[in-house]
Image (cartoon, rainbow, N blue to C red; front, side):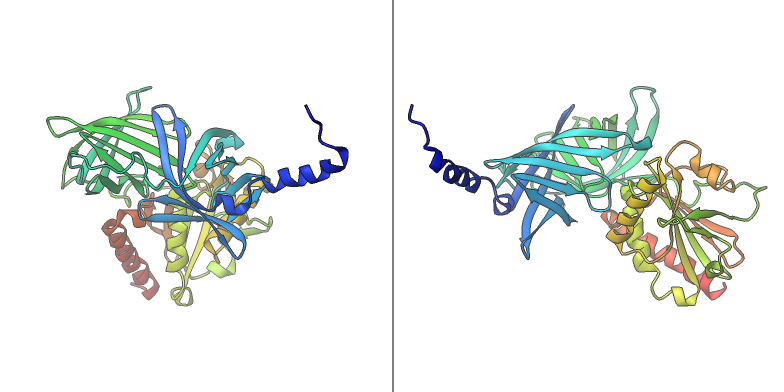
Length: 410
């Protein structure tokens, strides 16, 4: 076999390097998939170059979650999910991306899931096809069963169907499942979500009796059996009644460090004679992201009337420096201009230990509203965001009335 002359070796290397994928090769529409037990969990992804810099979007029905921290080098793409401590890394081969998505879990543990994507595909579960399908639109009362212990929880699925396309969300007492999207095929519906925070897969069939039977899975291993029935009157527990306060508790007081390590107390002069919203959450929590966007827009125009907001974070990290770094990313993602404090790590009992005034703690996020005398006059467990449509609008109107009344002294 002829040998490549030594003097031509540098040129051969240059030619090979020139064939390596460039940033332009990543630009386009992609069908992303997380292969998990129970089937593929798909989502849409779009990649563009803006002023020469790569930007990505994660697409779930009407939502396009922007991913601004994208690096492309040597045929590899790396993404830091927007406001989350999760990462996607994949290598390009032809029109295929193959790699992993890494999720941060409590106590700093990490779970890595496989990831595949095919360029040029804009369908989610199935290629476009004319098909006779069952109608899944409407309001469904859902029961989730944990097969490991038989524990039941409730939810409400609100679905819209156009042809074979199905979109919507699932409301729970802890908040909503944000934007889920998919398709109906025959007597079955397939729905999924990956927005950078969490990955969900729903698969269910419509029985001849008109009930839903199926399963719910997450990208980090959660599994629930689900059943459902249409119920226009389905409702969940009132979010303002779930968090209880200790009757013998002293007035709320706390002192925690901000991401720079500087302690801030509720006794700080900035909170004196103010109505204060104290929100308990974590950067890992998707519903906390929706709440942060709401509070960011809710505060302007009310601050000069005496409103303050303070965020208490309970992070998956156990080290302060790592929690502080996650907090700084969270602050930057949502342009937060109110105090964000590191209150502890995510673990059972951590919130009640930090805030002994609470008799129980149900879910992240939870808001406590304090009047000017620092009395807790309202609690709100969980957060159902824009994906819930009219429910979100009703919450905004009711919460605005409550806070504006406190600011006016009523």
